[in-house]
Length: 223
Picture 1 (cartoon, rainbow, N blue to C red):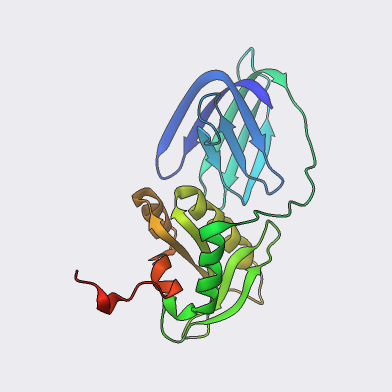
Picture 2 (tube, rainbow, N blue to C red):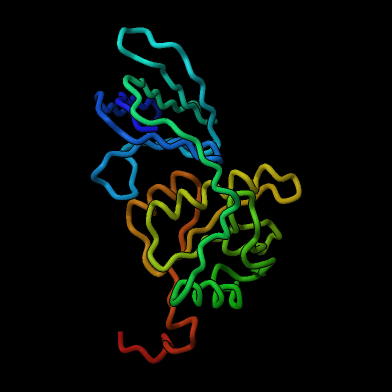
């Protein structure tokens, strides 16, 4: 939907977007995001799945409706919609998923072959473990036998943490897997991504691509 809207978020902190023309996206997984015309793919505000959307009548003149988006933690995103310029719905079907190449794909293979990178006694269950919204890179068992979902990135950013969070929500809803904890593995993890992962109980592991390939031996380093 493209519409004039006002957006108010209430949760761990509060945020307000005054009335302006924006793009509102509601995806099949239930997530909602609000976009401007100047930020590429990054939304101004959003609510990740799983969440619920309820539509209420407006309280003032010149308004079309009010959306209240709520997640399981009680956070709310209220979108007050004024004039609607475009409103359409499209079924995109099942996405085949990202076809990784280069370093990131090889990094996933190397970590699958070396689950001990994450800790002694860790074992691989499978690569590309399927979920309803796409495959998680690695499903492992730790030394206690508990399941761990690992998302592998070359460069760890907030988007990767959000992706793993969605996978974990679905996997922990499966009684055959739960409880499942998460690990975010990358060659470089940005501070913001590490902070977000920590607040969500997701572990972070820095991986050395050259060491995994056997090209770098720590004992041979001068420093």
